[in-house]
Length: 348
Ligand code: TYM
Image (cartoon, rainbow, N blue to C red; front, side, top):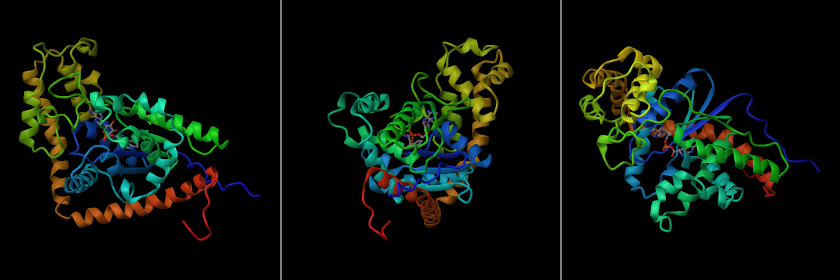
């Protein structure tokens, strides 16, 4: 009897990453993820980017707002430089392979592994009896997002590192359980000056779209005045900038602003402190605000323009979904074969 057909591993590198379209995109999403997605695309690597709407509903989403946020995030991707002809750009729910493989991975991942996920503990807090089952299972769906394409590299911010380790564990356990060399063990790509952008109000907390204070974050939809105002009001200390990064060790707010400057300018944080050594925040903050406005305003303006034609955005997402499906479906077919599930002749 012939063994299962194996889709070959991706030829070299294949990048997959995703962003939740819940609320708007923040400067953290932009510097930690989206800007890097564009760089990877421009390096000529095969890139697949997904708006993970099925992850978003692990916490309650108003349907009209979710639809709007998904289109707006797609517009943000394109405005930031994702070219839908060179990258595959789509929303997760349009490619059913994610949910199908997600279920199989629910049966591979162990309860103990999932219970150790710090993001679940943070999000559920004291309310863990009352959050959705999806919120708990979510990292298995995230592994499915990646492995449905046998992606090899996943650019993310620092906060997703543990989820990617889980993805590696799931791939290894699947390969072991079924005695196959099928799924690649993915490499997290966590690089650059801004892998963890912090809140503008509290340098020990991550900048997040779910923070109740809008002052804590810069949104990609903020206009130039709002960006400048938020940076001017960002919490800092009273000392001038030091000459070396060592001098920022116990100054999380100052370190955060330096990192943001570095990532926006394409410099290293070392270069930024050496350029601004001895400067007061009265000098540094306006320079940072000018830089942020110069980098972000063209993106915001283009997002607004793209949002005038939601039909075109939906068309682009549909085209991306077709291309994504063409890669994922044969991989999923092999998974069904490996796991012993019958596919009748002539069916997908
Ligand atoms: P999400 O939607 O919370 O964030 C999307 C991306 O933005 C990064 N990010 C940050 N980077 C630096 N500083 C911050 N303050 C900051 N906030 C967010 C995140 O690290 C992430 O890269 N589970 C994922 C989405 C996902 C995914 C995937 C990612 C679903 N499937 C498959 C990669 C591969 C999430 O909730 O990201």
